[in-house]
Length: 66
Image (cartoon, helix red, strand yellow):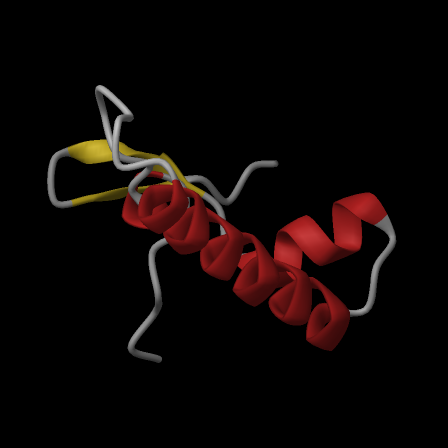
């Protein structure tokens, strides 16, 4: 995990390709799973309007412009 990079004064990040390598998963499958997690977070926010703090996917995933 030597490729952690600061992003605009935010916590360190790691590229999804490196995560896929670390966990032994194909990158395309990791991206699919991340999309699923984001949709589940959005649905949880819709279904649980009484959440004191909504779940913000951008707290966990930052889409790259590369």
